[in-house]
Image 1 (tube, rainbow, N blue to C red):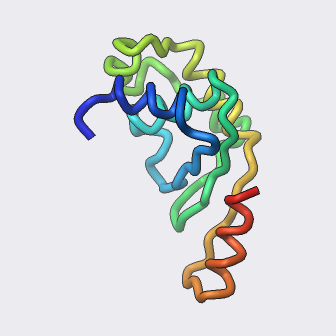
Image 2: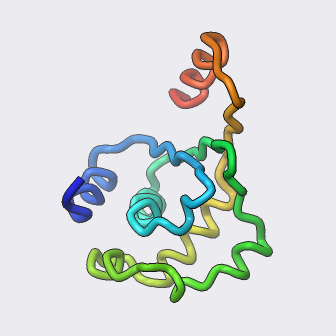
Length: 118
């Protein structure tokens, strides 16, 4: 992807559900936070797929996150300010999380697809 603005417009207008691939660094990636923020601000349904190394945001973790420490210049350029980022992180801390197993067979893959299609 080359344009954050195009990506965010797509999320706001054309996406019915956002699936966040919960990696160990998801909450430090500005473009990922931007997608999550636009989904949150536009009431797009969302779910987090917890990959190995993912840590779900707890209240204590939220309290330690300092928005000013994130590289949010590109977010600010697209109208996503500090308050929207804070609200997004709080909202995603309450979102459903699907724990991915270390190995996925056919049955687990079909179950996952069914959950995501809900």
